[in-house]
Length: 99
Image (cartoon, rainbow, N blue to C red; front, side, top):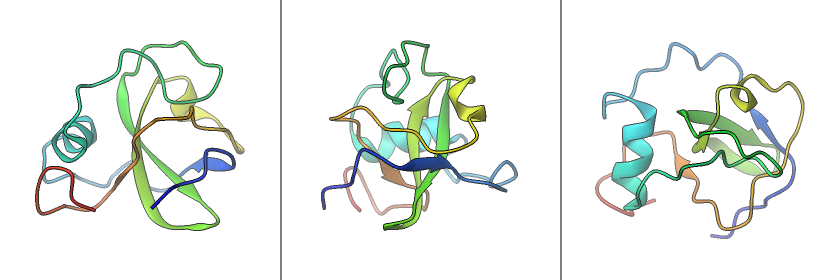
């Protein structure tokens, strides 16, 4: 499934959600089968990807995880995700690369 790059928002009320992988960054790494990227997933941001951030989109069901810097993780309003960024569902998956 191809996900849009425009129109994402930080999910509200997820700060207490716990990941079975220990951390949402670990969840993204485990389920994307990729190495953690050095920079934030938000378009035009070159900050260091510090966290696995919860994001949502009005046209996409569920909450997703993307590598993001602390600053962008606090954005209010919509933003675009860089093309080619892997988004992972914020639910336990059954193995590497499953969705």
